[in-house]
Image (cartoon, rainbow, N blue to C red; front, side, top):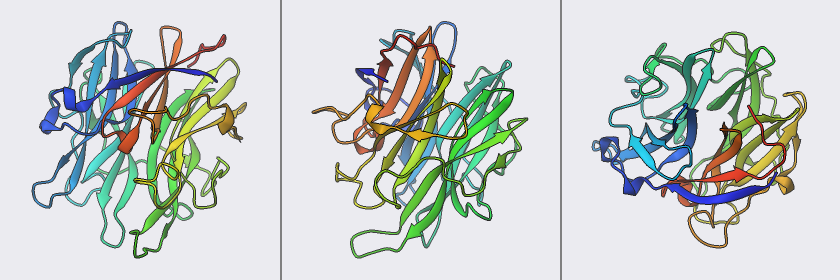
Length: 325
């Protein structure tokens, strides 16, 4: 896997977005049309009531050369949840699936907690206007905490392979006790679920499918999967559980794994084909990857420094076998 970086693609401070958001374009995710590519992302605004952030979904439409922004969303793509629901305080990220002419979304909704900062679950929504807006099927999640996955279920990425819906997602194993220097820190891993209808999911409870590279407290986030030739490829991001916000040695970087059966994955970070830049927007962090195919080319979107505060960039796969789905 070898990637040619194309640089920073979208900086939210240079565009007018809903709710006057001008910082953060996190977790870019695509919907490819005949003449353009729509890239969804999560942006933020401060809640006037308490000064804390709320996360909203927006999008930007690009030409297929990714040289020009054609439009940005001017209204809410999907509403935040009602009082007390799992997505009351934000949606981050959103994953779009177009299958058999239907456009659906899997959302990572989050709500604030008292003892710890957040809890998350996966929601489900449908679009009737070519992905400009999405309507939730219900106020609750389709995937959430359970007996052996007790917290922080989210970051769901869905593909349809071999007559089945496949979801790769994260689940929380535990929260680490707060210290004098750190608030409670979460530890989460990547897991896999299957479905026949895209709504009712069968999980392999508590089974982390990606081997730890750093230590047992490694945090793994935002899996994205594609098929090239006869092999499945996964990118994700990973970091240390603590001291990761401003320390580049402990912050997010991109990880890579491959599989021949969608179940068993071999981690192979040394062949990920993409690293920090020497300087610039992705020199201290790389996170929240998304692989997609456009006009027989394979691209990778990802965020850089400060968790995507300054936007997202793009890279193109350089390979003789670059036909993916």
